[in-house]
Length: 247
Image 1 (cartoon, rainbow, N blue to C red):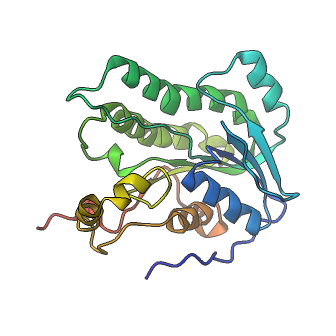
Image 2 (cartoon, rainbow, N blue to C red; image 1 turned 90 degrees about the horizontal axis):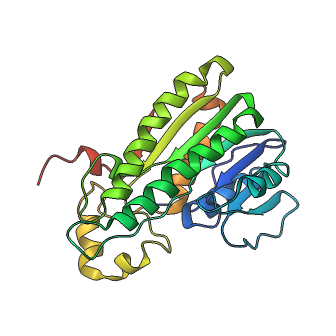
């Protein structure tokens, strides 16, 4: 049975940068790192109300920001141990084929915005640090009327492998996590639709949706000493969806 209890990880004195910290997954990851003693810089488009000395909210939209504003915000971020990328948008099309406007906006936000930020921040990531990218089962499977999101996540999955190799000379480990349907504000409409909720539940072996804690726990594990020999991997946290070949 799913649990919301926090696994006892200790990240005291570690500095974490979470992109997309106001979203369902990003917010849970942020709170769990704080609970584990880490200092978190949370980058988000909207203000996050967390009352903690271990939290600094940096308001910034990576998809729509000038270089000088980006540079000023980067000055607020000190050397970091872990970078967690949970920064993404998705906009399913009402048409059979997604419009070029939605396609371009999604790719620009989910891929180029992140990579441009990474180029600026990479030197602040300490040697022996960690990067964890949140991808999706969309990186592997086709879902209707949303090709830009799937492509952006597939590209992020591939980028994870490239970064793992390119940053290995600094012993920076880079991995990604591919969730299936997780119960968050973003998926609430689908979850409240009984037919869709049951259809999605039946896609995995555990016959249910995941919860944010089940993603956050894997993020914290990948940043821990217990995962010190894991890099360049995409871990599917999907209840068995991605290996289900039966009926």
